[in-house]
Amino acid sequence: MANITKSAGFVSKLEKDIVNELKAIGIKAKVTSEPVPTTKLFRLMVLSPQFKEMYHSERQSLVWRITEKAISQADQNRISMILTLTADEAKGK
Image 1 (spheres, rainbow, N blue to C red):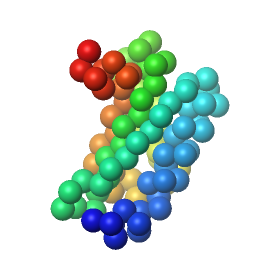
Image 2: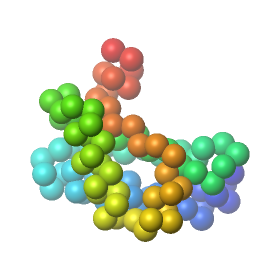
Image 3: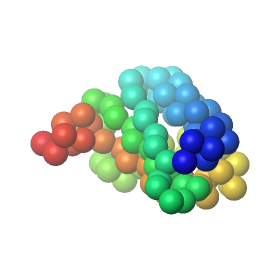
């Protein structure tokens, strides 16, 4: 599993790009990622209090537009999912 993580530098780049692009439009966010076990895929979670004022579809559209600009199509295909949540939603509240 460590080899997959080390070889996936695109994930670190994507995390930084999402944070920076959201910050540029006034959205403070924290991004975490993890490899999907037994695959070469990754999943990300983007947490932001400002997401509370947005529909889920708006959050997804925004983050995926950033993703499309930030990494290649081949690397996008290695993203299994991107969750866009508030901290309370992530805690199940």
